[in-house]
Amino acid sequence: MARLAPSLVRARTVIDARWPYRDRRSDGWIGDVAHQGRNSDHNPNARGIVDAIDVDMFGGTTPVTRGAIVAGFIVHPATNYVIFNRRIFQADDLFRPRVYNGINPHTEHCHCSVFQSVSAENNPAPWTMLAGWPDWPYLRKTSAGQHVRELQALLNAWGSSLACDGDFGPATDTAVRAYQARYGLAVDGIVGSETRGHLFT
Picture 1 (cartoon, rainbow, N blue to C red):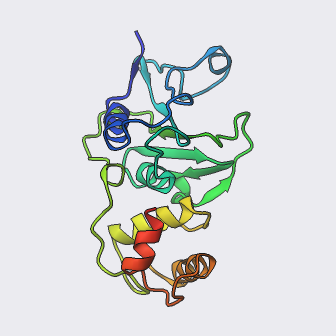
Picture 2: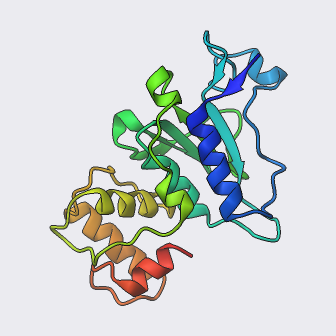
């Protein structure tokens, strides 16, 4: 009998706890007839494990914070790739988004696939960004580390095209300034309380 990868079961549990009344019409994990006719992570592998989920991102009385779900999937160590809104974010390219030309554009839901391995399927790492806002320090050019990687993932969820490498270099600085200008924030390249708060809305 097919089972969803335990790491993705935990992700779904965290999402449902944070947004208990979200719309679930586009949710899914086990492949339908269309999926069964092609290679898909929604089909059970040789171990009977399904390594993909789709999470509805629109509607419901507690609508989700879409950037948090896209970024939350991206930064988890088990994640192989994420698809949302005609873009695919792949681990082997540091989650730099590319155009996705698959059959389903994933405009109503976010797809997450973990690596096809026992260790990824059972990865115990928490889905931190899905659970709530991370407690960042102020981030700016020359900052580095996991907080910057989370920032880069969020910026990509909002439309940027960054490598999620944890290095706040010139490309990330440009992306932050472009985001600030687009939303009428102070354009200083510093991710303080105002910019962070907007990213998390």
